[in-house]
Image (cartoon, rainbow, N blue to C red; front, side, top):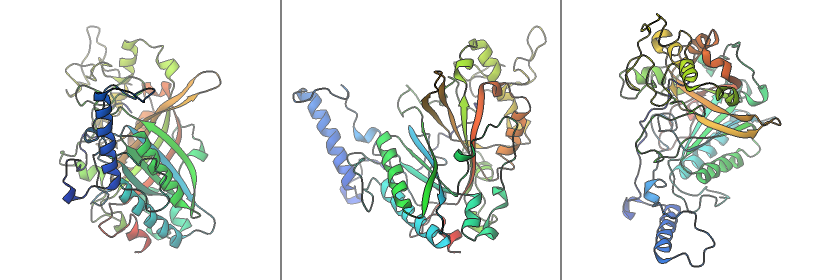
Length: 425
């Protein structure tokens, strides 16, 4: 979990500095005006305000103006940088809804996603929640669960790679919060922008689909650290040092279905494994820092392997201490998850942390909304999780509480909606 993470690469962004001739939405103009007004207010005094949200106004261009393109070879939300706020939501088609209704729904969803990602209002019944905000790097990503194909009469088009995940001994899964016919991932760098998209998607479902489960997550806000760095999870560990990088020659091969892949409608798509992983933080925080580092196999402060060097230094699996003991313990999480310890298996992790309050006994309901991407989960997630299941030191401090696997088709071309090649092919 802690040794693979999100790529620093993000999709093309569009600056608020674009000219009016290039097209700036009404909502983005309103947002810019609002940001400017805050600056002037700060300069001219706080008369008329009971309290200011911040003494330092942040211009829209520093965060809110970044735009991710909806149309493209791949769907957004896969290789983009981690978002500050995220929502994961699964839907089931309602009784009587089939292929025709699903096609109409994906068409509505795609239209809404395109508009909101561009910083525009929803086409109908917009709630105005994000009225004075920019796009804030919003992405909306759509996928299909195993059960979707039987519900729509498309069983022959269901990918073999979408076969149910095997059972793992460490699983404590809540079936009501697992799987689903349809899956939507929403991410943005502003909480209201993300919620606005969530509400719009839910409203668009109409009578065709109902929410099966929904989860909320977060990460650090962009600019919260002095320089870009690997994210930390709620255990305080750097989470994602060895994530595959888009610059690597085999990145696409590992993460995306090839253009000639089978089935054809999944060309340039990917498979998302989604797991709600509860962290037993009270137990974890009782460990000394040295004990925590032995569980992970990396220094908590820098993310460097216990065998030495910095965060990116290759781990020396054979190095021993003066007593002949392995410096990186044999059951350390970072050792077990290495691709070279799993037949080359790798996945692109793009998670969110979550905190959903406290149990009645005061135990935090918190952890990781694990989302990983791969061209084939049988060659990506499954072998790694099986290895972890057999003896990962971290397993004592986490609990897998829900699970889902979704086929995420390639991006929609101009004039298309996501999944059109499946639903109208």
